[in-house]
Length: 426
Ligand SMILES: Cc1cc2nc3c(=O)[nH]c(=O)nc-3n(C[C@H](O)[C@H](O)[C@H](O)COP(=O)(O)OP(=O)(O)OC[C@H]3O[C@@H](n4cnc5c(N)ncnc54)[C@H](O)[C@@H]3O)c2cc1C
Image (cartoon, rainbow, N blue to C red):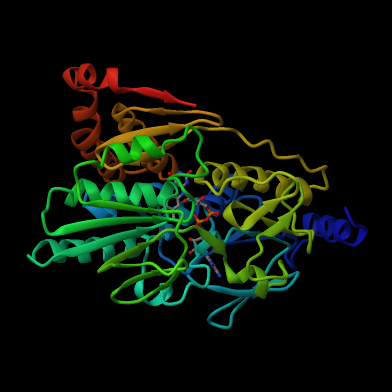
């Protein structure tokens, strides 16, 4: 650790105010998503003065937001109040956007400056349209509950009309396939709908193990679905999509899911040089630009060990970074992060579910209950019931999941029907 920083940290531990009381070190967390809130949970309010900054009032359970598209889940089932969660931890919640930071303060959108001894940056990612002309204006992103509700409303409105509606999902990666599955869940039997899936690779889910392309496509045989694989989008407008090879398709509702880009806060704060760059961090999550700044979750690019931008990594990073912040403030050696390898569950509407391991995948519709279990347990872990009212809310959540997913999926007759269809893909 650098001598100046070490001195600052030691001073933080020893400082007393004019009444002789110890002043707690100030920790600011920018971004209260999976990574930021898990870091906040780790830090004790009795020892640290913690502020969590986020412009949005709710944390959203992003791994299930595609289910809003079909109406399978409602927005309120996927949101928790940040203010309640943060205040329960004894910390301060500032519902603001952080504009930029120096090595000791974060500047907010209301002009306020929030001083810190150590800052944890967890600003996640934003929708990436790769500069495709018209994509920001005419295509619908699906990175938040609000955005998925917009898509759901447009699809629902179209279903009330007899006019043909062409729905296109751009991006055949995991999120695109999950979104398309939800569109098919709700509308595949409606005769006025036609469906397109566009992917620049020549197969769906190109970064997933198990070559699942054929399996996914087999579920949509017999429906009005066209796959445009190996196609790069050149432009989007209100009539449809033009491809770089000169082809074009008509599209009335275009859903955009081609990946993530870094949040501009990183570049504005000189934590990266380039707008498309993720923030480089060392093995302890310290920014390469500033030692008292830790960067975690989707925003971080850990040295020599790229990690998939996944919620479970963000959660583990949040906990590990908070422990390192405590160690830094206590002048102890920092600990290296060991990522865990958890399988990822990917749903394809009500037609199939895949569990992705490192080198292979398992497919079975009974796995749908696993995704629901991750969701219900995840929400309960994030907001464990503290009052009778909370408990009623939690039981309601479990009951809704049980009614909708667990019981139909785990019904013994269904199991007998579905088990022979389970398959391993390597
Ligand atoms: C549709 C979809 C499906 C997904 N499915 C899965 C899945 O099945 N499994 C899985 O593991 N992962 C999944 N992910 C990925 C997962 O959600 C992310 O990896 C995870 O949310 C990253 O956590 P994070 O804390 O880094 O960022 P986020 O959870 O995105 O949180 C970032 C927070 O920072 C805040 N913020 C941004 N800018 C500022 C600023 N300037 N000032 C203050 N606050 C700011 C934002 O408001 C946000 O609350 C999915 C993501 C999406 C979008």
